[in-house]
Image (cartoon, rainbow, N blue to C red; front, side):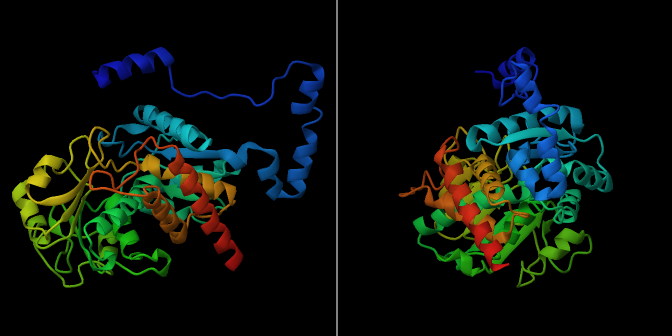
Amino acid sequence: MDYFKESLILHKRLRGKIRVGTKFDVRTKEDLALVYSPGVAAPCREIAEDPEKVWDYTIKSNTVAIVTDGSAVLGLGNIGARAAIPVMEGKAMLFKRFAGIDAFPICLDTQDPDKIVETVKMISPVFGGVNLEDISAPNSFEVEQRLQDIGIPVFHDDQHGTAIVVLGGLINAAKLVNKDFSDLKVVINGAGAAGVAIAKLLQCVGGEHLDMCVPVRNILVCDSKGIISPDRSDLNSSKQELLKFTNREKISGGLKDALEDADVFIGVSVGNLLVAEDIERMAKDAIVFGLANPDPEIMPEEAKKGGAAIVGTGRSDLPNQVNNVLGFPGIFRGALDARAKVISARMKIAAARAISNCLMHPTHEMVIPPTLNAEVAFKVAEAVRDAAIEEQGQG
């Protein structure tokens, strides 16, 4: 099937993939009086007296805003707000399909962080959560950070969703190759939103008891110019922040230098970057997650030719697909059910553990649950909800 051609036909025929529906059919004057004037005044008064009751009487408890500025859409780059709409519609469909959440695309015709932050704050009363999507770094870091105090969880899926699913797969992969999680040498290629989030999540977890925050101690992050190291003068603020917990030995050089004796390669960069000889530099039974789309940093057969034991990509037609749909529906479902105000590190770790635990018997060809496994979202939701409630109780 020519997916590009057929997708154009489908989108033109449907004129958008989502729509607004109603939960109550208005057929009589009594119905109208209940859902609108005069009856609707009652819940309005209740909410005015106690703002928390908005969760009980409105769509807020089950509604997520999918907010983008169109600056980093899939592998298409900065295509703008209008061109991003089909992707955000698709995201809304996945929210509904896997977690029963009503989500709506909010595609902003601005790439000014101040305006994005202001807009999200102004529309937040009607939403129970905000999924930031396809916003380029470093703006994505700034926008997310500035929205952590608005009373509902704000989660940049390109960062944390990717990191959570990677961690879920890596937990199982490390077990299969009999390597201690905290002793792994991990090389991350790509220092954008996803690469930074993966590094941050890996450095605060590890081992069997992830809630104990045993760190992965040896992490190297590379960008297009090589290893992020203290001797470089071209690092932006987010890359400088990485140096606080990565590259502890202050190694310089390129990606190939970083790969020497590495146990894990995680690519969130560009396709066709590595060949088998590069994987040969890595430690025995290497784990390779090449997540660039549509072409991974290295194809599975090439990686295995170089000695990789476990290989994952972002593609649905290859084994071990690392796909955010395993994370974000359940994460938001759990956060909404707990009425969480933020999505914390503990909630992210709980989500990753739930993803890994969905496979009772992982194999080299399946360290991550299949993308369309509907049970994953419910298990992730339960784990995230419990983690959030536990934190609320401690607070």
